[in-house]
Image 1 (cartoon, rainbow, N blue to C red):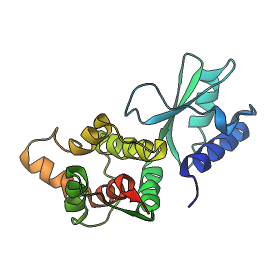
Image 2: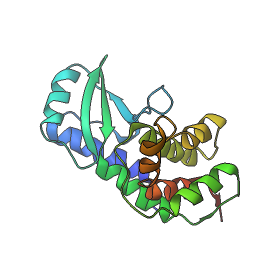
Image 3: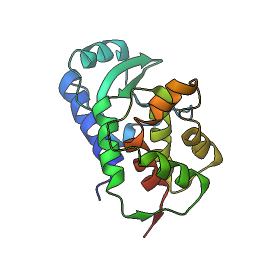
Image 4: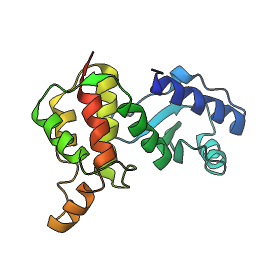
Length: 180
């Protein structure tokens, strides 16, 4: 299966160069220091604000917004990218290990397939699950983000959000699984 992160950073590097004329190596992209942050970053020499303005004027399918901060370009991923992550993760050849997290995600996955809800905690959980899968190790903080992704809402709102999290839960279930 293709390396999703490598494909994403290669596409972003090509897009940055096409829009700004400044070459960026795919391996120059970094994850932010804050856990769960929904962005990728790359340092650019001078003119980060101008580059962000140009990129926001011609957004690519994987990005919903670009911000400049201290010489860095921060790329915030789009609805389409998160929906693609769900599809990609569901295609993984893994078996669940049977932990509380896998059982909860399996239960939520039964609520049906669907796109990634536009809820920051849900997207943060999916992103962190992907990063944990990529690094090959899950930490307690990664699991906690997944377990509490709907807890910030009161009763009926929480249930409504959980009813839309089937695709996300199925993806997290696969990302947490044990490779065959």
